[in-house]
Image (cartoon, rainbow, N blue to C red; front, side, top):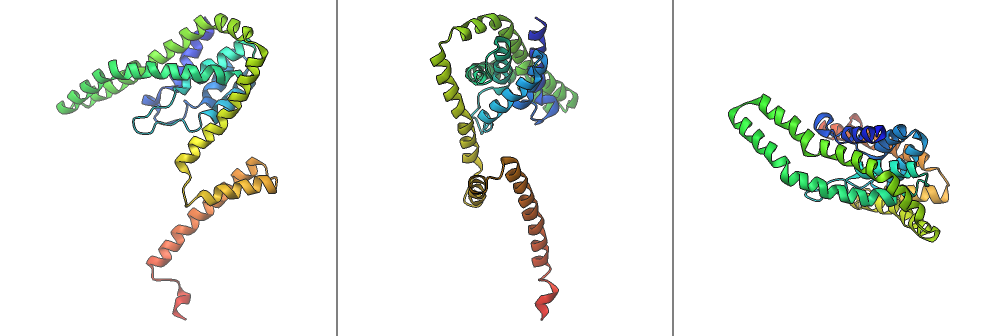
Length: 256
């Protein structure tokens, strides 16, 4: 019971963007690490969080399209996996369906709960009541999906721990092997989604550069990432200098 309550609080912390802004506390690497802390196995929590981070790396809201609710997916996927003693790969097979189910709950809350607080805030804004607007922001953020998400995660873990353990242990070995292979594709899908959003004609050359460094020079990913940071700093640092020189009419050597 205590673990269910603590997991519900972890979910509420991750969804407290109405208090913290875009703090990235909702990312799987953070949520699964805190889940591992609650479950008494922080190392496995970090491993599961890293796996889920790869799968959800491109999970950002674009316009009206909402990605699966990764807070509940990450927490419950990690918690149920650790509670049942299964390998970290199983967390993805549990977490992704749960994230999709929680998205339905989130949309329902957005339809039936959030509009009340939005309209009340609009009315307070017309009256010039700043405190009323702030109060609606805080109450709306708490009751719209923060509290419902905490209740969903805590209740799902409390009711589903023993049931999920039984189900997972009953899965045949060949099915678990197939799920392991399928979940191995999820990081590639996450990278593909992210690449489709950020890669364009101007920066695709850096993608190929990193690939060549990794394949032909065997440079570790960490080294390539650090090289990318240095390259970005050099490019950003050079461009303002060039711009200021152009605005000043060129450097002193142009006179000769």
